[in-house]
Image 1 (cartoon, rainbow, N blue to C red):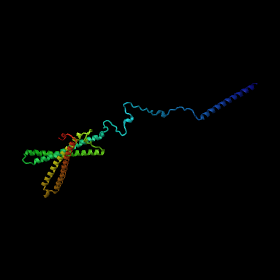
Image 2 (image 1 turned 60 degrees about the horizontal axis):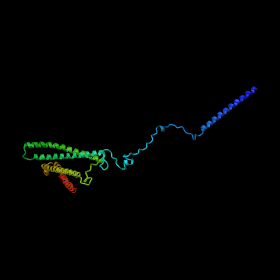
Image 3 (image 1 turned 90 degrees about the vertical axis):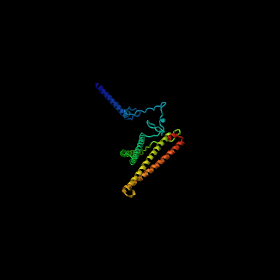
Image 4 (image 1 turned 135 degrees about the vertical axis):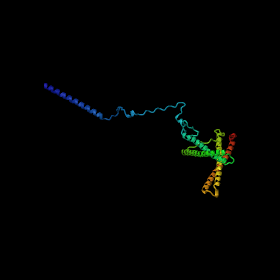
Length: 296
């Protein structure tokens, strides 16, 4: 009887173990199948990426223009120049700082070249005057000595004056060529009339100053080249002319006289033109009802 009970208990225990094993195996298989199914509808776990770390800031909304400030479409119209500090605004002569500086340098260089050329020409005229004084009879010995000493000094000054005039002319030519390569232009002359249509007195004064300078320069050069032609002619005669002497030297003197005569003709033509320009300017001023005191 005891043996039968023991056998039944053992069988029950074995059955329970089998049931537990079967349940465990069924649960394991169910979990494995669930893991292999697609995760449709399941929410992913958020992850931190480099985009989240180095993401640019969001654009800020544009500020509304306040009263009195320019709207974006009104700030600059297409094709309208932007006015900057120190530069001319629309309607004015627009030049860069470099061109403005170049204009000033050319103006000064032109004035300097003109003054040095005038100084050289006046020095040569002074030498001619001293030579004539020295050749005048009836002068005292002291006067002749003083004149000869001044003539010697004037000759040295003439050499320096010619060298300075040539250097100034070369500097001016270099500046003008630089401006030509850069596309620069010198300042325009004043217009004949002002903004209200009335005669512009500055225009007439500017032209009068230029014409007056042209007349003085032409008169000075006429006297200068007349002296040269006369002096060379005398030297030709003193060296025998066509009757003898050094033929090569005489031929050179004759060429120098021809060159001086050509310069004299140019100076006379320039004087005639300058005087005609002055007459035309006076007539233009009269028609424009400009005061006659301008030409006094």
